[in-house]
Image 1 (cartoon, rainbow, N blue to C red):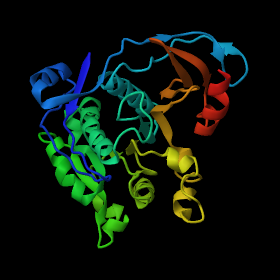
Image 2 (image 1 turned 60 degrees about the vertical axis):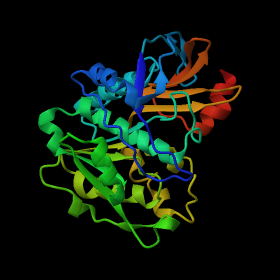
Image 3 (image 1 turned 180 degrees about the horizontal axis):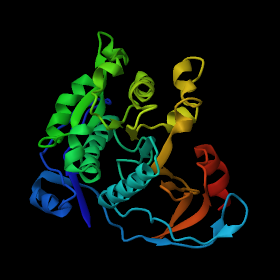
Length: 320
């Protein structure tokens, strides 16, 4: 199966600009629109006919367990269907704060393989497609999708043309925009009484964006029936200590305040090199470390809790 996405703008530095070709698919008939817009799209991924092999693997270093869980997706069409199912199950289980994270430069790509601006634009299109299949038409007007900056919403309106989702932003550009600063937006002013679901797209370009996301959660989600999904927020930067706590104390504090309350419902992180592999999770399944051998994905390790990327790279994969 081929998956096609709109042609994206290319820039020399990470900038949030969209060159939209006007195509998307909906849950009703995803293939029709893709065929109709064949000349408007370029290939972003394709099926490799890879097989997922189920076998006995060590579970957190103890007893082995046999399982037949969600296979690694063949393409982004497959990925979005898996993420939708995982999110629905998490919502059914009462999860209120959720994370979806996967590479957009290719299913087996790693951070840095794609240009930052393009990755954000690709995430925007994938958010549209994800929301189309997750949110029912009657719930669309109660779904608010936040993008990092106010300027980005006007581009998002092209990608979301014809949809009823509410488009919003986390920050406003300021006089110091070129230095990575934005004007803080009061979240209480952005939220409306009938909002039920918030989805925040890729809040990682500016360090203040995730701080605003925490404010959104505390002011509009906590102690309510609302739900919040963070889509490709690169939260591993915060988890791994990429931002020194001395210089970014508020961001570092999220590891003790916001992140522990979060359920990672869908996740892909690839590791390259001789001991390469993939950390993969599809809720409610376990965290699994996969290795691509020929045309097959082998599960070499699994556990119930998320391992650190350092542990996977330095301990689990070399020993697999």
